Image 1 (cartoon, rainbow, N blue to C red):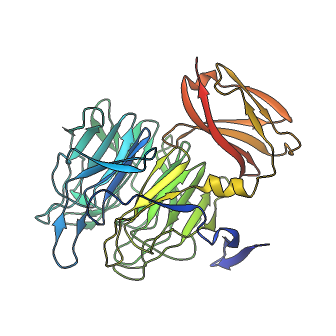
Image 2 (spheres, rainbow, N blue to C red):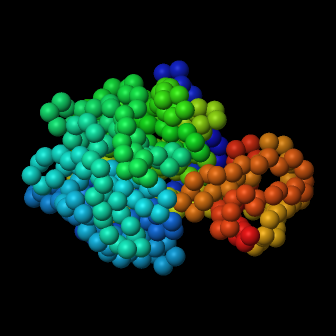
Image 3 (tube, rainbow, N blue to C red):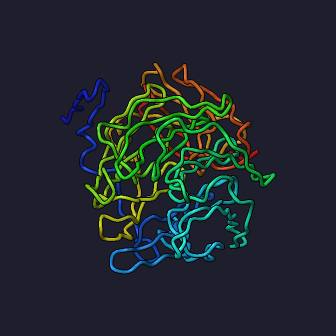
Length: 404
């Protein structure tokens, strides 16, 4: 039987889970459609993922403007329209509704940008929007809360590095400044959201950091949270899925030791637990996107540029450890209600969570009886992922179709 090992670093508690040390939740998929590269930009729209831009700089410096779409249902890539702003790398990307937004970054001349472009996947077109306030930059991070995009940090023209943050309203096509990030100025940080909470951490000024912060938009306030594992890092990857956040890979300083470890964040307890290492070779500048309950990640460099591409399926691993648990969710499809039958499973601290296809958590309900009926018509017609959790462990997951 494999056990979890607990260790203490700088008065912070971390857990290493040996049961997940064999990479059983990382599955290699079809290679990225374009040439190998790093400092790419990635995002998801609906049930498709996108990776583009980036560069190589080993013997020659080549910047890219291409974008590629990944279809998980066919495990295949197809090339889309080139980015409207031209060749560049270290740009940010985020998704609001059915559109994606990409901006800033470094262009072939060496200068930094402050532009913003909207991608429409149906029309396969890029449309320029209002430039981002503040200095031109690269290596910024971006997240979305309640339909508002947030962009900040990065390496900026003229002053080195930044801790400024700005918010974008896509309906008004306008920007406004929010509270300055209270950590040190930095580039190549990472971020993710869990429900209505946003988190930012790691990054560096040539040397990695492992501090971690939460942004509360209703208060326009930042709060420091538990450090990200015991190792400072920059140029890492960050994402959230199934109500947990993840940060990993990267390096300790620019072109230094490359990492392959991954850490899981529980926002309810403000704790980090080491989880399965990234499935590929340790690297920096790995990029990722989330579709439903799965994460997809690829490209990056350790001195050699990569184009391998991986799927992270934590639910598959957790369900393997719960094969003897018989839990039913029905009817499916449904027009209004679902019934959750736990059979002989204990109802203590049990709940069900519903996610949109882009992985956003939209509804949580407690399960208080062995057989519980829940009204889900407020979700609206569509297909949703669900997870049933007991003491924060997932015991069953699947899809539910709601036809109103």
